[in-house]
Length: 123
Length: 123
DNA sequence: CCTTGTGTGATATATTTAGTATAACATATG
DNA sequence: CATATGTTATACTAAATATATCACACAAGG
Image (cartoon, rainbow over all chains, first blue to last red; front, side, top):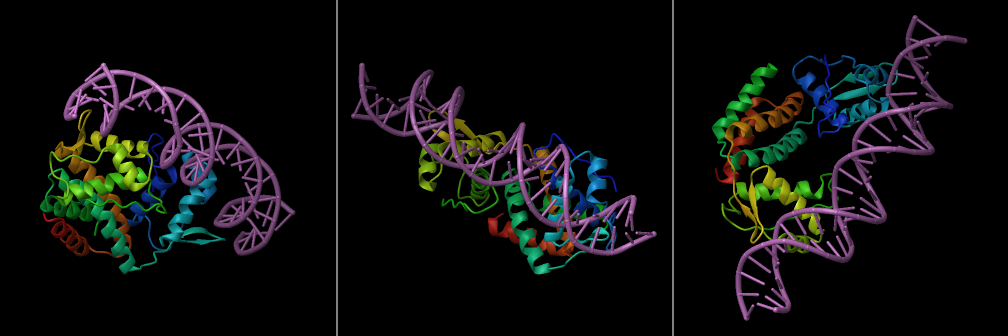
């Protein structure tokens, strides 16, 4: 999978890394049990520091997307806590939808967007 | 409208302020043409610095939620650029939905959440 | 005319976060 | 033993965040 970092973005590099890897999992470019590049390797590929990658991996571990094995590095391993995930999705959606509503975007527009994204992700 | 700031949150104060005011607009607690508290007044109410409120107001102005009048302060004035708003909603949704999908949340769950939020906002 | 209340601007300072640069360590693999 | 893994520690720079003052321009009201 190709990971691209926008160094001019206002989003921190480690946040962009997390999001892209999660996007990769959602689009089945990364599959359960698959091994991510080592922190040193990915850091060199992207041209950033090892610790920045390590921070992203640690967060992904904490959020239950990967498990980290001393021998093999970071491995995709989804820890499903659906109730918790639903709560988080709800509070994140609340912010996004409030903005959308103010701008005159109706619920049908949102439903269409959701379907479009799910179709694109192959769900 | 009551604005509450969580000083222990990892979200910056000015970001929380922006989100809460946008939430207030979405829920019709703030209406078009209505006047927001002055930067000094709101700062004192919350117990934060004037400039922190000013930063939030400036961002809201830049994002097209308020207009700032030297005489009357910040006034709710939605600038509707639906195409742009749709693009932003899409990219924000893409991140949220990727996380949800990985955790086994299906599109029906999301549609239900969307309806729930829109109902709650009174749309 | 003066006071008051707007937003705005400049400056300074403290704190936290982000990112980098090195180095070293424990451990598992071959 | 050499290599590659994550991990830990330290130090440093740069940027973001938040606060603290002070001052300015402008408009409203007495």
